Each structure stands twice: as C-alpha cells, then as structure tokens.
Image (cartoon, rainbow, N blue to C red; front, side, top):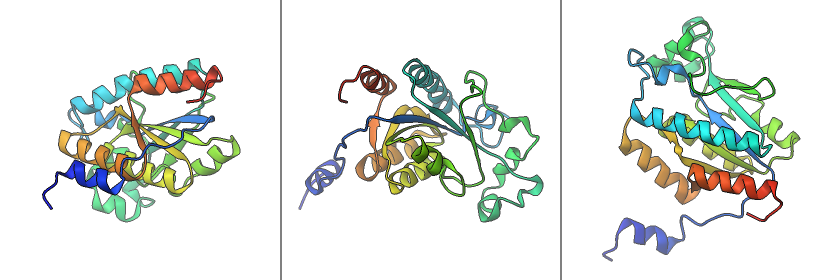
Length: 216
C-alpha cells in the first residue's frame, strides 16, 4: 500500500483530540540560563529563545485567569552523585550543579513566591518528585506544558503526565530545542500518542474560557 506517513497515522486513528478538563495548570519546564548562554554546553539557540518568549505570554495568561503555575528545575549535588546514570550519560548536565548560576531561571521569566518550584534530577518533571501529588491535591485534571527541551524533559514530562492520568496539552510554540528536526519529530509523536498540541494563543483562549465558565 502506497500511503504517506500522515495518511498512515490518520488511518490508524492517531492524533485524536481529547476532552480538555476544567481545572488546568501550567507547568514551565527547566527554563534555565544554561540554554540561553552561548558559552554553555546546553546552549539551545533561537528555538529556546522563542519558547521563552511564548512561555512568558502563557504565564501571563495563566496568572490573569487564576490558573496555577508550577515551575521545574534540574539541580545536582557536586559531582552529580544524586544524578545517577543520567548525569554520567549526559556530561553537559554538570553546569546544573547547585551553586552554578547557569541553573537559575532565565531572565525574562519570573517565578512568584506562591508558584512552586519542583527540583528534579531526571528528565521527567514527575519522576522522583511530588508533582503528581501536588496536582492531584489541587484537583488539577489538565496540564499545559511549556519548556525545554522538546526532545528531552518536555517529552519525558508529557509521557508521565499522561501516564498519571492528566489530560496533557503541549504548547507547541512555548517549547523549544536546539535543532528543528528533534523539535518537530517529538511534537509529532507527542501529538500522535500522548497529548494535544496547542499554540500559546489557543492556550490563552482555553484558560479564559475556563475562567468565564464556558466549556472548552
């Protein structure tokens, strides 16, 4: 059978849209300075800059509508003794040791005191953290993901968010990577199996509809 990839996925029923919930939260994943400093081994370039700028819009919309915002960061003890195999497999993670300013939140995004920061050592925002319990305790049923990088911590967090039972939306222009190929491929795969893709503008409209009591 001669068919395109899109035709093959459509025939199988992939990329199905979900019913979004009424208690969303925004999760901003790993917007560390390390992805924005050209001397950093984790430097991500224009794709990360664009994601940061859109994430700022998303966070503003969340705050305006009273939607919870949660941040994540990656931090390691000296030598990465708490980083296990991941730290050994990915040497650039050394710049995220405690005390290195490259691990700090990038300029252009600000975390408010009432917005939790989840500290992690592995790609997923859920693995080995209290994030799922935090969301459940607050009655959250839907998560909107922004962050870095699309092929790494965003994808891992997306799969785990779905696995924990949360309707998952990936804000496609508020996630970024160091190359377009991995970025696009992972967006495609997340859309096929794990999450709905939305733009920042679409996400803001959804959050506003929730605030106004309309069905998404």
